[in-house]
Image: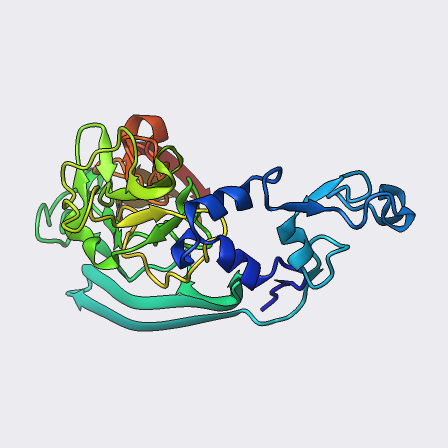
Length: 364
């Protein structure tokens, strides 16, 4: 599959020297993220006509700047910005599944059909971090671990020649006989959350996942207003505390373990600082809410005239009227006290409320 690469990225050695998670001091880190600090160097391209915006279209404006951040000069071709090479075709998608299907008939009146799918879909090959040259290998956004589906068709045993009212006259039989009831039920696992993943939304792609084993169904909870999908144990490199790893202000740490070797808590997530490697997370363990649905129908065909037939249908969608938030990721803003949750009122349900309709069809 199509993939791309930045062949003129900032040098890995320079990034590592600025990386707090690879031993950079707070002073060095501060200089690296401050383009006007000691990390800036004289611009060797300033005033050189070949590097004017008219000749290069360079958005970094090398021609006018007196100083540049030293990171720019660590590129293989420092006179240019990012250079994207496309059509590398390194990407892959792999899908494996186990599928079970069952069908049974009872006396030509009741038919049951059910299936179960247990599957896994993975993507890999793309660059997760072009600077540190880390490849991706992760669960596809649409991956569902399992899915149940069942449907039933039941010719109701009412009317002429059937168990109930079998001797009814043709007028009564026309009203109560020959009806068919159908129902379809589906129940499926939630899709992977984007926290720590390349497709992460709602600020999820800016987080590092530290403890994947903390998550799963057992850690989900549902309240009147929110759905919690993970813990709120998140840390950050606090700029107000010399970039030391610590608690995020106003975050809820009531269910987090206290750090036995220092201040703060044991974090399940860390807000990734600048220059840190975007490590591969195959599976964060956090799943979006599950989904289920029940649709039902009641139908009957009448002979109207010669070859003309009338079909009446009563159909109900989401008969259980169960609201869902399937397909919505949790909120991963570290400064939000509802970190790791979905707000039921803010997000709104993703399925339709109970919907009932009556329809008629004439065929001839």
